[in-house]
Length: 278
Image (cartoon, rainbow, N blue to C red; front, top):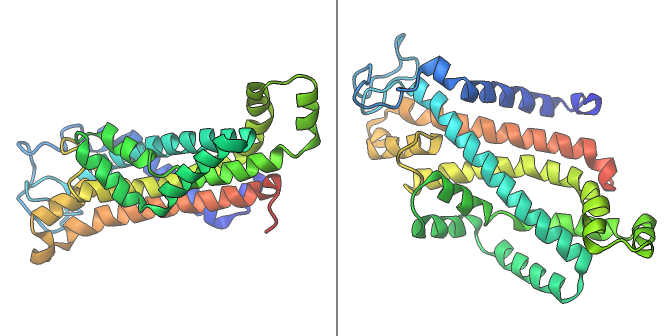
């Protein structure tokens, strides 16, 4: 933590994330659970910002400030779950490919290369199109298309770890594959995995917003990308109703930037342990 505090950008990112997390966690207390209701909307449709509605209202008269706060719950949750799935897949493939080598590593790395050359967003859109529109679909579509970078990094670190003398001693003492991977390799690649997770969460939040904006998200929940889609369908762009577009866009940008800053700071702190010269 003392080292992390020396990374000023990381502190800014952590502060922003803490505020967003508190807003998302206590959103029902701040805005109420009926903020997304179209039948009990408190304002007139498409009101510009005012004292009563600091961010204006949408086409149904709902308070946009409340919708942005409520939407943080879905956007952050989907980003976190998708990143966990992505990192889990990438770590599993990276560790096993680095440990077993041979034909298994060759096959896994060719699959990884195929995913790397394919546009991630196009693959996610294809998966989201053929599956039902739900949060689970969004998480899966993002998670199974963003793991290759993690797999590459983890495999490289696994190969470096397995050249160390204590791995040879563990093998000489009869340590099996599972023992070596779980007790010796995985703990040494976890710092890299931690840094990679924070960076992937940023990408996952952007991907979720993109899918929702394209109409491939869950239509029954409020998210930042969904608000942008609603604004487009309501004609906010052509009508010049900027207050409908700017708040969710800024929220997406701020959170994505905050996770990126935290990820870079964690990477800088853990860099000596990863054996990489800066």
